[in-house]
Image (cartoon, rainbow, N blue to C red; front, side, top):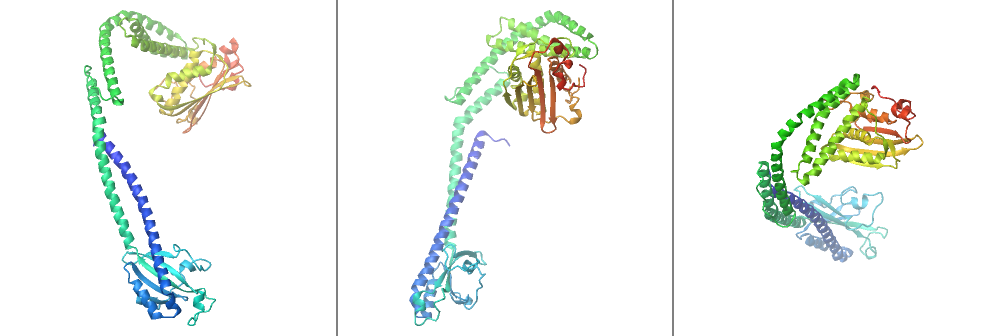
Length: 542
């Protein structure tokens, strides 16, 4: 079931409001419950104090009938459930519930545990600690509070009193009141909160629906209809202007996009009419280029295969570059698209340079070296790849150190870095962290570039084979020459590549280039140079 925007906003806001109101009501109910319970404890304590003050003279005169009559009158109040008098031994000597008279309460009973529950006997306690809550068999809740009857001076000096002065407590007065009124207040407050919550949610949902319908839903529907017309190729429509806000700017952008698309389609139709003739005119040139590329397959062994791959790649690159050049020289080309065509030509030429890197693996050409910054070359390589779809969810961390200029071929070294960045992105399946760290090691004479990813890692069984030509772990993808070519390029620069990997954790490639310009001998045969000794050669032919 598809929900529209209004329904989603109303449901989301109502859910948030409901959660807020429920939390607010819960906190209020808890606070009100604690407040009412405290008031009930105070009221029960006041009843107990009133009984003791009222019957004080009666106890001094030992006027038990009047004393019991007073307790019965107070116990007849609606809130009072039970009043009982317990002597020092725990015997109930009087209770408004006659069945309890004469029973004996142990020190472990709920009422007596207030003073007798600890390791020492408590002579006095706060009203909160002297209170207790319990339920009867019908589920009604009650509050009980005990109050000690102390052996005051007026008691042990009275003529009728027979308790010695050493007794501190003569007995306990226990008052039990019902909490029905407290629960009734809580229920009423809860019901009122529920009604207010329902009312607020209904009003909020209604207000949001009306506002969203007018301010959001109507403009969005018009934009959606315009988009559908564009998808059908109808480029003559325009979106009606909205208010001066983001949606209005979006409508203006849609209109500008429609105009540009209409112009682009007209230009493409014009190019299409002349493209066939242009293809026929250039067919002979392409055939000659193909013949020249085919002759490059005369390399021996592995060099022949690499040259063949270069031939197959150069075919589309040559066509792209040729037609891009023709388009750029066309006087009908829109000025706003010349930069895009120039970008296509520049990147096509860079791809052609990469193809030349394949020939480097076959020892066809030598690096065109100069003093360049490895940090700048790394940044240029990142610029080429980090806006690709593969790198949209990959975080790139640059830890560039101070590295002096190094003698290298920037195009070939950029090719090496791009290859490793792409391998890392594929190992992370388009989501993870790619970290590039550079530093100089003057003691060893190296400029170091470390490329680390947190991808799937390389199993130990194949780690030693990754630099072998045509070895690839990607099914139906790649040629398996990327790392081989990269190794050959770094090798020709007098450096080496080291790899560390752990399955499930990630892979780190460490590239080392000599800080000092190597001699021609070291540059052409780096196995004999001082830097190659630190790097074991891979298992592919040099």
